[in-house]
Image (tube, rainbow, N blue to C red):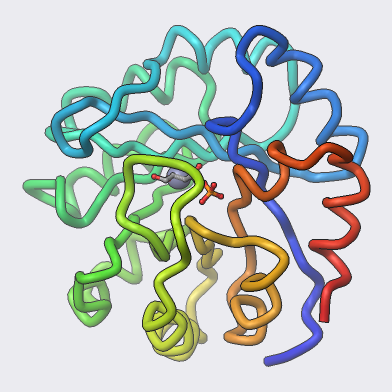
Amino acid sequence: MKNKQRNISPSILSANFTRLKEDINIVEELGVDRLHVDVMDGHFVPNLTFGPFIIKQIREITNLHLETHLMISNPEKYIKHYADAGSDTIIIHYEASKNITKDLKLIRSYNKMAGIAINPDTDYKHIEKYLDCLDYILIMSVFPGFGGQSFIEPTLKTMESIVEMSKNHNIVIGVDGGVNLSTIKKVYDTGIDVTIVGSALYGASNIEQRYNDLLNTH
Ligand code: DX5
Ligand code: ZN
């Protein structure tokens, strides 16, 4: 599936938190419709970010669709907090959840879209049995924990396989990690729907120019 419209979800992990509102306004004005929010617990991944408190404040300043990527152990304990904070999609990790069906149903019980993320070394076939409970699949093209890592090429094959596997379901497929001017074309050529872009967008000296280049690079 080629030439599909490119949908970019900026990752605020690479934004400047001393002027987060301005950094969110910049991408709103570029016309994005979603924002990627990375929650890390220092346990499931070797880094820490923030919790529902910050997401609640982000919710107050934007109407963008907030996709909350939970890189945390025991996600079941915290799903309600991220739903109450105003997330629109809540993404748990396959590798972190102890009861995936239960967790996905819990997310949907709060009228939120339910997502699952899979690490680069997780066999995508494990998620086939959850397709009916899923609204979003996030394919990690780096090992989660940090922005600015290099794209792991073999995950392109996983993207193609997941696009094929979910073609009869209404599921958004996102790709997270190492998406930049050199990798974005091959990622979209697999047929996925959304790329998450952190450092390659917020790290640019001209964010607007970079955004347009990311949309148009062939
Ligand atoms: C990585 C995070 C990503 C991160 C991507 O653990 O899940 O969302 O912000 O950053 P870049 O685009 O810099 O690889
Ligand atoms: Zn992420």
